[in-house]
Each structure stands twice: as C-alpha cells, then as structure tokens.
Image 1 (cartoon, rainbow, N blue to C red):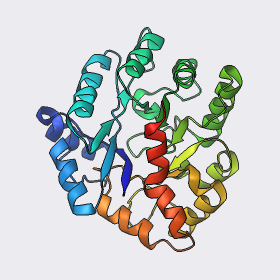
Image 2: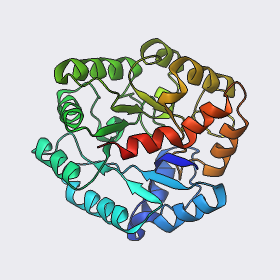
Image 3: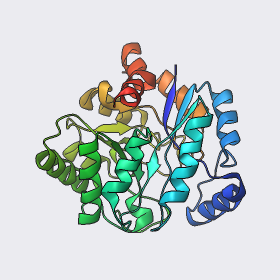
Amino acid sequence: MVIDFHTHVFPDKIAARSIQTLEQVSEDINAFTDGTLQGLLDSMDRSGIDRSVILPVATRKGQFDTINRFAREINRTYDRLYSFGGIHPDDDEVEDKLRFLKDNGFRGIKIHPDYTGVCIDDERYIRIITAAARLGLLVVTHAGVDPAFDQIHCTPQKGRAVMDHVFQETGVRKPFLVFAHLGGILVHKDVQKYLIGTDCYLDISCSFRDISPFCDTSDEDVAEVIRSHGAERILFASDSPWNDQKAYREKLLALSGVSEQEKELIFHQNAEKLLAET
C-alpha cells in the first residue's frame, strides 16, 4: 500500500491554463501530469500509488465555496482520491467555515503562506490554525522556499513558534501540523534546529535533490531526518504534478539507512492513521 499525502489537481476547464501559468512563474519546474483528476489517476496507475491526498490552495479571498465544492465532489466520487479543504487567511467567519469542513467529513486543510502573501505567524493564520486544532482538523502547510516567490512566508522558526503557541492556547497535545517538503525547501539547517523531534509531521515531497530540481537535500539528508524525527512522523508525498510519483516511490523504496518497517510507516501506515482519525 502506498499513499501519496501531497498532490494537486485542478478542474478540467482550468487545468491547462493553471499548469501553464505555474510553470511560467516557477522557473525550470515542469509538470509531470496535465493537472486533471484523470491525469493524477493515470500517474498513480503508472507509479504503483494506491491512494492520493489532494491539497487545494485558496489563493484569494472568496474562493472557499468553489474550492471546497470541488473537493467535496472528489471525496464523494473517487475511492482512490481524498481531498482536504482550502481556506484563505482573509476569509470571513473562518471558525464557521472550518466547522463546515469538519461536518462534511474533511480531514484537514491545506494552507500556502507564499501564495497568499501572509506569513504563517500572522494573526490571521494563527486564528485559522488554532480553530483547526480545536476541531481536530489537520493543517498541511507549504514550508520553506517557493520558486515563484522571493520571501519565505513559512520558515521553520515561524512554524515552530506557531505550533508551540497553538499547543499552549488549545491544550491539544497530539500533532496536527504537517510541514511539507521535509519541513522546508532550502532551509534544511533550520529544519534540524527548530522542527526535528517536535510534535509535527513532515512530508518528503521536494526533498531529493537528484529528482527534484529545486531543493538542497540529499538521500542521506532525508534518511537522517527520518531517523532523528522518527519514521512515525514522516509521510510519503510527491507534490504531483510538480514531481514524478513513480520516481518518488522508487527513491524511498531504495533509500538506505531506513528499515523496511520504517518505510511501511512512511508509505501508508502513518497516513492511514491520520485519515481515519476523527
């Protein structure tokens, strides 16, 4: 069993335009699928991926209804796909919106501080993350550099501060934050300093520098993070369509210094546990 905890798709009518735009603003990064649901399913079939978690990104205020209507339809239609919800930091009535997602069976939300231009330690994001933690919703955040932007809006230091604040504010004691890209693209030293060993999950998307064009971590770095953070807090992820699911699956399968039992945790057991929790 393999569960990819970090993928993206777009509605068919805007997929081609969205992929083209994002390729243009992200330097040399090119998509491995056409960005559609069928494109993701085809990639999964080629790559030996059993299930994929889709992470929608709200890039502006007012997209909540459209994004989450599409996400809810995915969850009702596809057995192999599961979509999180999306919310923007400038949305009104965020507590009510998050409650709506919870009541409609969503397991979590995706946030992207770079695409919204709002740092993760801004009070708007703190409000969203705090409310999500109280509701038992997971929060997956982009972390580290994004090639389309000059500023890092979610550094490991900021992420750690928000996590600690929300734990203290809510009394929640189990991990609810997932920092994508092994805790942060191009900020590996700060990931080691601020996130390793804390109560958060890290996904491994955009973390192998020989198959991802925009990261600085080697196979040895990834294995060391798995050992030091604990395989029980690591999630398999590709960031499809921006990385090749097959290449990521094969890379983890071949990764030395990580036991077969640890790989089973990363490939699916951790994800199954998170998706089953209510």
